[in-house]
Amino acid sequence: MTTTTITSATISNQPLAELDPEIAAVLEQELGRQRGTLEMIASENFAPRAVMEAQGSVLTNKYAEGYPGRRYYGGCEYVDVAEQLAIDRVKALFGAEYANVQPHSGAQANAAALSAMITPGDKILGLSLAHGGHLTHGMKLNFSGKLYNVAAYQVEEDSFRVDMDKLREQAIAEKPQVIIAGWSAYPRHLDFAAFRSIADEVGALLWTDMAHFAGLVAAGLHPSRCRTPTSSPPRCTRRWPAPVPA
Image (cartoon, rainbow, N blue to C red):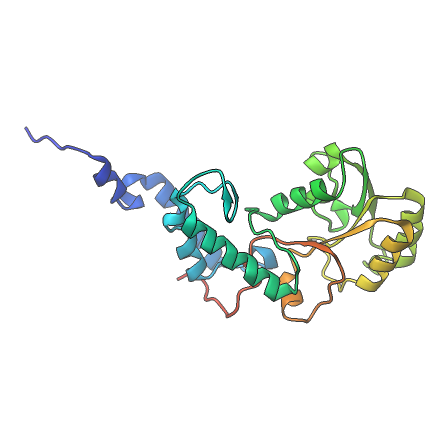
């Protein structure tokens, strides 16, 4: 009778296909889906191989609550270096004075931004989800719709564009604490000057969710006149073209 001893070292060195063939099969299926479809969502672009390598690296093993130099766990000296590099690069890329690179997603970044700017019960004014807005811009089932009072602006039926004059009238009537410039499914240029003017007129903070056009902002092809922009992890801001997953 043959006896096989399984140790932690054995498990640690097993490829995924051997350790968990069901999950490995799911990954293969997802790879096939990505290869066989054309993804038109900029923020859901293909991550470069270098990014995939970093995400699957030894950094996965380290807790790092807090900020560089101010952690709640020991042994964060190299994580601190990595995070500070990311902070410095984001600041340089977007000309920002400050940057927080800790959110794992655009939704987390949006939650952090709103909690920093306003308190529960305050009012936000964003593009309606049905007209191209995002879940975190005030959808009732989302945290934003549960914590804050929500008013929504819309696109015009004939032009499919946001009428900035109507938006101004709505902002004056609603008196929001935050106006959201940015969306998920509105392939138009943002009139930042108009948004800025309206926000200043009604005393609102202007927040830009630029997850779907951050690459254009970084390249100088899209304006940005907002003190508090947010974005999803930088699949749409890579420095060189990445190939379709092989």
